[in-house]
Image 1: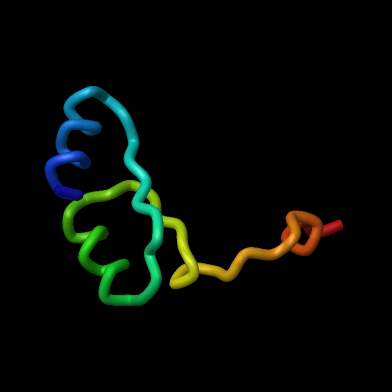
Image 2 (image 1 turned 90 degrees about the vertical axis):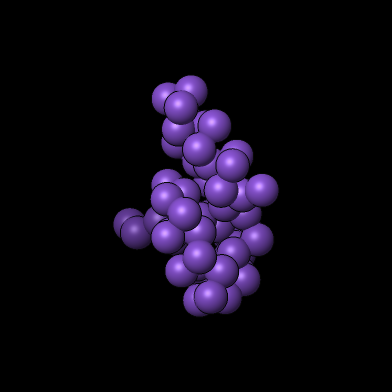
Length: 55
């Protein structure tokens, strides 16, 4: 399902994002499929935006 949606997005000229990437296995799988971006606890735990902005 993810691979099909990714292919449709790319055919339409869109970049794709995989949500709920919780571990390295999922990250590797969606990377192999060709998903453009990932988000989820396996990438980084949520935190306030101000913590990410450097002064």
